[in-house]
Length: 538
Image (tube, rainbow, N blue to C red):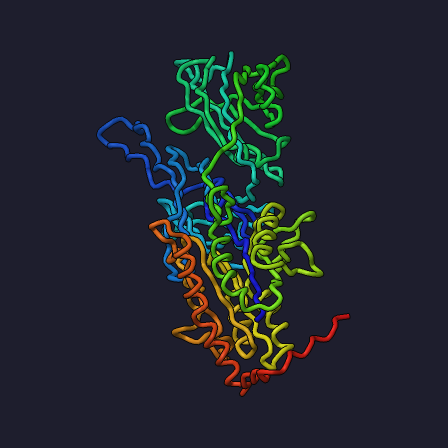
């Protein structure tokens, strides 16, 4: 019996470590909402009073809510919302939405505010020039509700958190009856030369020498892991009506900011308009970086592949439990083992069918222990990546099984997966084609997913079909790993029960193939005859 374990690096759960890839994690920025429809109007003047308009009431607060659409139910579900910005028709939001991006799937998004809606697919943002797209808001008939600008950028793997504190000295006075109410706005530069807001400090009232509170920001939000990328910082004087007065700006970088760990760094605040108009203009004050520190963001190991020093991962336990049973039916105990959904070193090529032992010429591993050893080594060298394709490895095993149709060999493919599948149509087609071959497929689902797609492939209730063609026989057995976690801690017993249920259908699947081909069991050799020696291998 051929046993083809296929350990799927798949993807870690979210914490999904904000995984990257064709399953890429993108911070989706509602960068700007511009020229929003003003639903607040001035009160009409009273004819009996002097013709003086009262002060306008505050504008409606601006907030954008992101909804994502379920592929299964087509229902819209709230994913998140921006912060609320008062008194402006041109809000610039700081809060970002972090989404997993699947290249081969259409991920519909809806953006709502108080005035209207915008519909588009995530791929439209990613594919826009500079990963940037603009959409008109619709909602009020006959009215222009404004536009929404969206930008996206792939997150880096940087997990550091920067903490800093700044103060300013001798800023320009902007208020007629007071000094100024200064605050800072930080912008990250994008690859196309534009800037995206990433942080706002608090407002310090009535001073030209503010000291802002220390704040923390992820390094990837500040520069996306590029330490030399420009960081622009604007200085504003806060106004109650939202028309904040620009004081000046300066630029820096993460690398330059980090020097403040050893010394103060002073930046001149410059106002380009003043600099052009006034020959004697020096600056609009200075900003001093008082302190800067960096800490790593530690998280619990949420990956299903996490290699704990105390116990096997879910992937490894499933592989060991099933493999140790089925290897008894393999004569040479050599198992070709593959992974899918990973970037391979050194060039970072994405692969859906790579040998775990890194040997393209001979992917065989010696026993299940050899498979586990290759799996652990692979995790140390590849980068988990999407999308997740099942069809390539199913077709590979099918090609091998198609060469031997006399019943002398039967192939079993074991797929261990977190349930994410990106090529459902192709996988169904591969299963339908393989159903006429001497092979079975075992799928063990690990993690908390609902596994609807895996249950559909199982075919117990409805035979798998593709393009109007039904599978000749049921060759897939699926079990969710979580159903076999023994709460009493008896891991050996629960893994034995898993192996029993996983392998329960294999004998009947094998016999059904033999019956349909009228392949009879080979008669046992005569009692007194000695076995024929095997021919020597060249």
